[in-house]
Image (cartoon, rainbow, N blue to C red; front, side, top):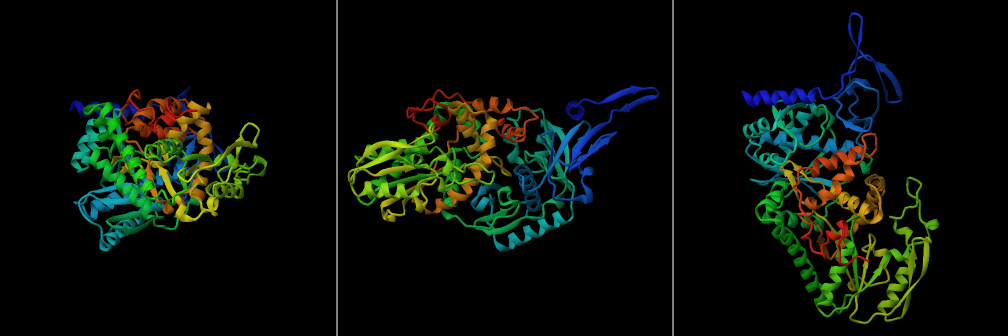
Length: 575
């Protein structure tokens, strides 16, 4: 009884934590009027209005809304002056909600059709979600039954009803509904309440805002992808369309290995990571993760050494904030220990003058494009070096915005050239070099960490956090400045980088399972400094919602040569 009273108190407290705009007049109390700007209109209201009621004809293309830059569900009631921006699947914030809601429906379909099968979601190939069966194996019949049930749920347009309970009551709900994987993370939730969603008797929590009803989720594709299923959904970078499925076995294999290692190390969930810190201690956990990186470097050293008579060019590429610079330095040391003396050359020194750079869709110089580089000169110089000629390399002076003469270089037969950059694996950069003389390495953090079985941690958000922390520490850039550049960075990655990973000889997973625990203390103040009226507030809010579950970890025991140091500082490779 006491627990239910406490729960009711918190529910009522949350329900009434906004300012009630009333003014007293003769004869009673009258609600103060307020104005809303929405969909090209401006209208005055005398009472609370639900966002859904502002949309004509029940248009389900709108997924959510920004209300004075605060991301809100369409069931939210507005009671104050506000600018309301409705978002569709062309907007990244809306897609996050769409995807979370779609995972809810998949989990609901399994609960109805295969109640004894446990599933786990993780991000996978072709910008999709992999549905892993924890106690079974998928087949075509299962795929068809789940797809049929999903369509049935969606066609019924069932409401997703949000309700608030105390953490104690949430535990009871999880136990009653056999959602036992959610119990471990519950202890790390700082709030005293939990927002659950009920849909026709099925209850779950996706750590996200949700669509008002299942009828909003008609766009999806489900396919068999042994030993599980692949769920595709609209993507903002594809203008709200579902991208064509493109298999990526190399990438998929890396994700599978990452998940397998996470299970072995007990680091495939946030609760598991936090438990490592509490039980095994900070030093052991850091060393465990770093040992994995050391092992991969040793493995790379063996491969390169075994074919050193052929390999003249070692190409390293990966998306933003993958840790390319530290990795290139550590690989160089690994090869030096084997008597191999690599030379590093920066692709950045081959930038064309900014005035000659191509223009992106925002009308700005597109420095992510391969056309921003002097491809012909780079090819010519690499070939000349490999053939034993002496070459004067260029050096790009970023203050002057142009190239100036750089070092004069000549390489020997036992001196492979390491090139590193987002276009290093693109064949156009090294078209004059025979393929057998090139060893290609793709590097990226391939995280396979979940809050619980139905809620994976975003790999892209992990890289964004890395970049926010690094840009602030080393470039004096605010979190907002980094976020403003991120869409352009992502466009460049999809256009120029991801397609090259399947041609790689080796994929290096730069994820360190402890890193978000370390990153938290650096990132949280920067994210919390973003005001609510800032256009990047919804992104900050999303990142905070993820980070808050990780326990803090001191960074004093992070090795000076760790890839982590590239972002938080203290690297022994710093210039």
